[in-house]
Image (cartoon, rainbow, N blue to C red; front, top):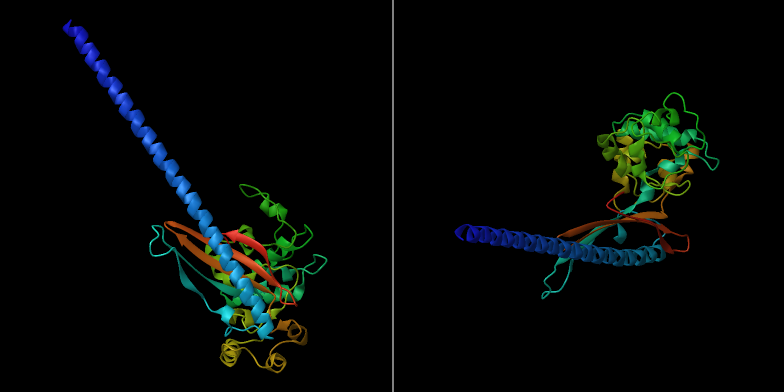
Length: 310
């Protein structure tokens, strides 16, 4: 009899332990499901806030086109977007939103490396080589990048790289042999590493077709890449002369510094901008990028959006 009672007690204890374990597991799963729901909801709220900021920036750029015939670093769009709070004083969920607008035509356009037929443009290739040198990077990446976007599958000499190289990697892949939509694609170039790409990215863009360089917003290395004889002293003089309000006369300023064919590719206005917005809702943080195209009539259209990538 005592033995039967002992077995019954042990059985009851096992059942209670099992029930406790199951209850804890259900509560844990419910807690995770609830947290996932909140994170998904906050993320969606953050994206909607970023899209609202994008609409605001479209208005800013449209108004800028009406008010000014040039684009320079002294304009409203070139200042950082102020930090704005999300949520009212009584709300339990708080957040913030801030960001910046960049002129993408102040950078070297990687897609300028090829012409309308997909053939390598030698002058653009040489400019990219000079940009790499100005940044202290290996100039051979210019030829490798040109092979990445040109239409043929023949490796350029002496610095090209085509499928014969990339299909030997693990995992293997192929070069696109067409213009790119994101500079992040250059991470796949033969020999490219993160440190090199981090130095290069602030000075390059991937814009549709061929574009001119807006010298009013170009960085020092981009200005130095315009001509082989451009010295660091020349660049420092140009940046000092430009200030925040831009150059008053591009033709007279650059005619003695660059070749005539390059002079024709310089501009003081821009058609392409990039908006970067950072939104925090509670513990969720979203980085939103939007490439914006402004037409000659002043209409502004988002042409590429991404989250957490350049």
